[in-house]
Amino acid sequence: MTVHILPPDLQATRPPPSPDPLIVVEDVAKRFVDGRTGRVTAALEHLSFAIREGEFVCLLGPSGCGKSSVLDLLCGFEQPSAGRIRVEGGPVREPGPDRGIVFQEALLFPWLSVLDNITFAPRLAGVPAALYRPRAARLIALMGLDGFENHAPYELSGGMRQRAAIARAWISEPRILLMDEPFGALDAQTRLGMQEQLLIAREATGATVLFVTHDIEEALFLADRILVLSGRPGRVAREIPVPFGRSRRYSALLTDERFGRLKREIVEEFRAG
Ligand SMILES: Nc1ncnc2c1ncn2[C@@H]1O[C@H](COP(=O)(O)OP(=O)(O)OP(=O)(O)O)[C@@H](O)[C@H]1O
Image 1: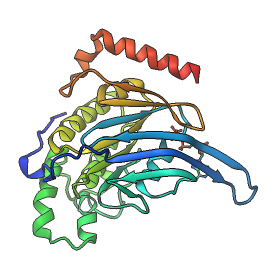
Image 2: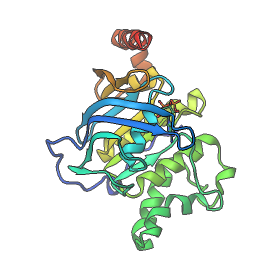
Image 3: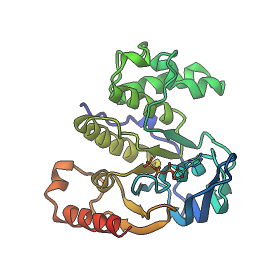
Image 4: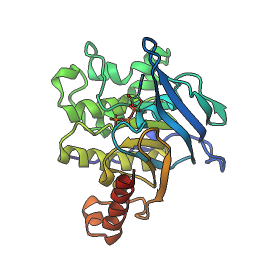
């Protein structure tokens, strides 16, 4: 896959990073109550972490440990049962343009073209076409979707649909990108290309990324820091700074002895529960 470098006009114009964390999660619990039976499911308990501006953090944990619930809280789809969540210093009450979201399924509107999907948010917000059109064109090029602007989502491959979903999340210049296993449904080769493209785009935009995955190698390849969640109810069992710097090649990591060591350590952490 061609990897495009983000052009300067797509680089977000932001104030210099603040020394205060951009995202703060403090002793958060999330419990779901079944309205019919009254049964309570504790998804998260005593969850605390902070993320600084510009960091790429992976939330890594086994299935069902509450990873998606963390993103739902940060998006504002759900409210915590206990504890506090602050984004840019304020509480999260609802979804907002400061937080772009990419789910495992691309969730494009099937009746809209690729271009109309990507430009959905600025059109809804009444942004003039002269402002968002050039930006959309560059994102389409960046994501390797040239020539597919007028295609419907069903005419795209799974990888292309996901790239369109990322472009849609990125068009509003979100300060934070929340990604829930976005490459989980892709084949290994497409996935690798997407991961490399994401790292380049993140580097160029300076966006803060919280990326949920259950794939240890994916977390080690992408993250500046990994938060390993415990089994349900999820809390941070371990925090791992990733020592590979920002310009990464997957092939180089595979021969790095630290990669194998960290992978073994995380596997042990999973086994310990
Ligand atoms: N809306 C909901 N109502 C009731 N229970 C829920 C709801 N959302 C999540 N849960 C429960 O909370 C727990 C954590 O779910 P969550 O989807 O956050 O885990 P996850 O780590 O993202 O899982 P996976 O990796 O399998 O997607 C699970 O036991 C799930 O059944």
